[in-house]
Image 1: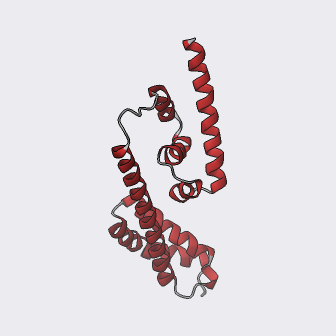
Image 2: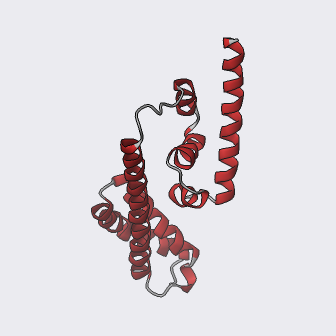
Image 3: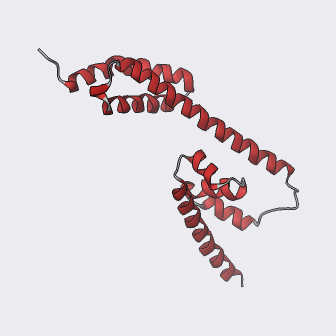
Length: 163
């Protein structure tokens, strides 16, 4: 009797997922990230289910590639933080940003705040912001535009109140 594809997939998941997630956990040192990576590896396996001859090998190679991508992303983030920290340390203390602008930037939604901080405060090109955030360059540009518009509206409002 031939087992259904869904039954085979379910059994494989039951047997391999805990091991794969545990292996990923040891590599990335974070439960949530490990489960995301293991889940993504299975998702990619299901997409190629009929053409993959060795599912276990496919899963571990795919997970290893995803772990490597995760490590690269962490390293880019570390470099960005170091860069911002060094720039802040060497910047003259007399160059203070207007506290109201700083507060406005901090009040932006994270989706808009992160590109603003990386592009304008850390002086990163859009290409690098795109790589760090995992967003397309067009999305980063649109987010920067939306953030500038929000800041412009808020600054106008606060200037109107001070006059």
